Length: 175
Image 1: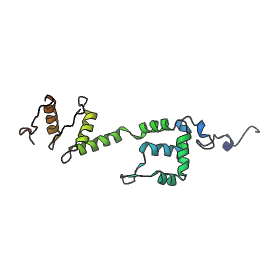
Image 2 (image 1 turned 60 degrees about the vertical axis):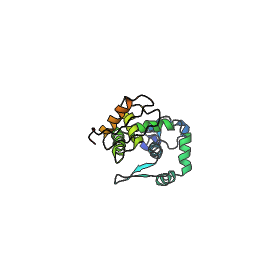
Image 3 (image 1 turned 180 degrees about the horizontal axis):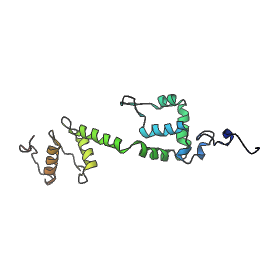
Image 4 (image 1 turned 180 degrees about the vertical axis):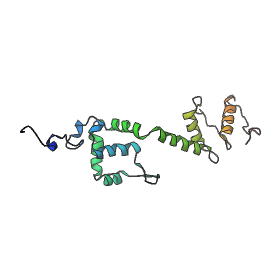
């Protein structure tokens, strides 16, 4: 029984503790605090509250909640060799398809609400319509209240030669 050691003597050290930061080569080697810091960097401080709302948490507030100093967080970011690779890896997990869909939904609502936000419309179309091309010169368009009106005006504008002035007020588009 001389060779029998207690379980605590055989256990590997806690990931991230007692290990030189420069020796961390895999995300599984991070401590819970270090992984939380990676996640904070993924979301850039945008924290989801229990009621589903979002708020921005400063680095100082995050450090306090984690029980470490801001300097420790900076040191981890600087000295863990693959820190930004770990952030990219976690981004794939954290930003699931559901979260991406929420962004598209919000962009769509912003694009079609009220007078419409032209930049939001362009961004939305650039991401969902493979044939959409951003305008190469400024174009002022009053979009109306529907996507059909916007698409009709876009289609009509695409058939116009450069320098030609076109009245986009179409009485027959149902608006």
